[in-house]
Amino acid sequence: MQTLRRTPLFERHAALGARLVPFAGWEMPVQYAGIGEEHRAVRTRAGVFDVSHMGQLRLADAGAHEYLQARLSNDLDRIEAGQAQYTLLTNEVGGIVDDLIAYRRGDDDYLLVVNASNVAQDHAALPETEDVSDRWALLAVQGPEALALLGIDVEPFTFREDADVLGVRCLVAGTGYTGERGCELGCAPEDAGRLWDEILARGLTPCGLGARDTLRLEVCYPLHGNDISPERTPIEAGLGWACALEKDFTGVEVLRRQKEEGPDQKLVAFVMEDAGIPRTGMRIQEGGEVTSGTQSPLLGKGIGLGYVDAALSAPETPITIDLRGRPRRARIVPKPFYKREER
Amino acid sequence: MAAEESYPEDLRYHARHDWVRIDGDVATLGITWHAQDQLGEIVYYEPPQEGASLSKDEGFGGVESVKAYEELFTPLSGEIVEVNAKAVEAPETINEDPYGEGWLVRVRLADPGEQDDLLDAAAYRKLLEEQ
Image 1 (cartoon, chains in turn brown, red):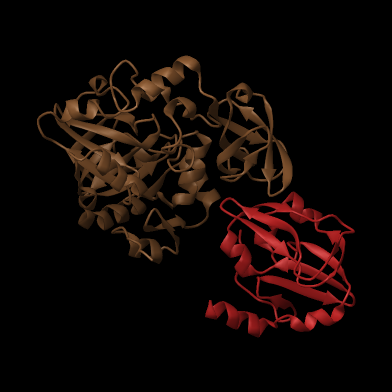
Image 2 (cartoon, one colour):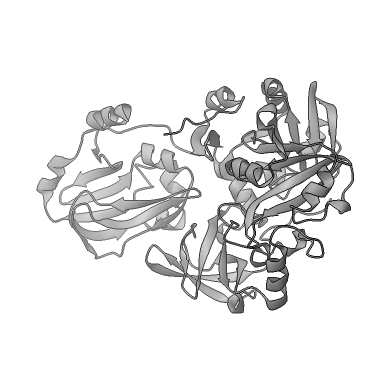
């Protein structure tokens, strides 16, 4: 068995009484006080997540922009230095190798933040990049009060480097995976402990991967490996908005055709009408499969994402989930389940 | 709020982390503090039908937290005479009071001799330490 990797904050998680579980080859905290409590902290106030397991690829040579523009789905011409963009790495058949955030540092200078489980695949598809994952620790600070509590001002999908955050040199990015305002802080691994301690001292709630999953699911952010995969295309997944089909990138012809003809299946959101929690891999009896499911702390009901035949994908369509042999009623709803209030 | 860790002396235990309180020919069943702690906040209890007959080690329902579903097995054969409606309506009761208000079912025992296979509190605690 492969040894699990640990982030620079591992001892701190253990000392806080976190439940540590294997995730994408890392030993990560799934919860501290409890998923529900951590979830509510992020929705109502502020929480902090150790996401140092995520990968970073760097490309800073002449031609970097052109290279990535030919391989990533979104249009990098739409961002300039100091801006970030959600984008996809696709394969020859239009499947999703990974979803990632591209940070543009200069004309020909990019940092890509990718899923922990896909670093090797991404690097293989983008061999010109350098895997610099070991040089970064990453903390996500999320919630309506998060930025104010840390004295940070950053706009969504912008970032700046070499900023002083609580005495630590950080990359500050207006990004996250919870649907709340907040930021992600990248720093040197040796500084991560100090940054984490300073953040907790300001009263933010330590949050684990469990709450990260319930939070992202309520806002319908897809999880790679569950809701999106190399076997599913962005058109099926409802991520056409992150694909600049007028430019050339890997698999674009397939995606153009699929958009024109319409996909056979679509990723939809659904709410349980009956009791029970949908789980990944459960069958949708009308034709389809659950790709993510949980009990929504917000709605107090089972919610999920899954692929269904396009003909069944309209909101309000009733579907039936096979919950361990028992048919349970659910209803397709518009995405997302939750949208934060502008303030 | 979750209960404090405890394994009452007057209960019998099963290695699958169930407890049993025997009163004559009726047994009350629940899950142990350890089981509810492993699951985290329980949000769903899928009970059996009252009146159903179960054999020892047969599955009879499940409890589910945000992160996992745990199937329930009866350590004793018998007929389900009562389902705890409070645990169905407010599954968090199972976390809050696993040996009291958070009980799951009452079973009229078909073979009281089966209870000899169960563990006492000391043996169950030893089993937890070894895990």
